Length: 274
Image 1 (tube, rainbow, N blue to C red):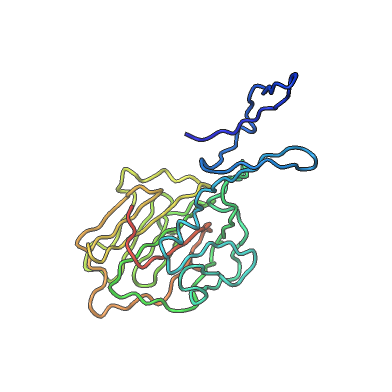
Image 2: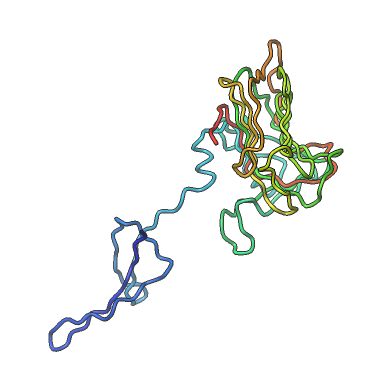
């Protein structure tokens, strides 16, 4: 139940207090239940003040999971791709020439002008962004999540690379399915969402939320689209003896033949639960 604020006017009739019928102050008012109301004059008129708790933002929820790398892709000019994850500026990256910055992001509804106005980036064909320093992964669990959309449909023969963790994992889009390809694994090295009943009918200019998880303890890997599981691999030893750690993380790829929008890319050194 949400509290509602009403107002009533007090007058006196021969010394007897009389209150008018209560009316709602504003239909959208949602004060905290324990909020103290304050009545003050504002420009000579009585005004009621209260506090409302803002919902936890997407960025706050993401940072609460302690990502090593977190790229909001909100830059309005390049070439620096800022990391606000725990690595700080050591995890910064560089946009290649031709990336279109300051695009409408995944968390904003442009029709109603509501949601998070954080911006996104469009990686045109042949453009990408890479982190500046090597990231070391040995036998650790990890999670990658991000949002993407497309305005030109790729083909299975020319898929779009979305996020690439060097020799360890690559997530790509064929126009009809997402594929998580894993390197250095003992077997069962890929997940293709087309085999799942949860695989969506991908629509141009619509954002999709993607998560890839590798659990080193359980030796499993999973791929999720909009929170729905579209594939899982079991008995998976992703890091074989002598395998190389990740040397870079790249967003999009200079070999992509069609463009793609990316937003809110995060990398965690743990297997998040979904």
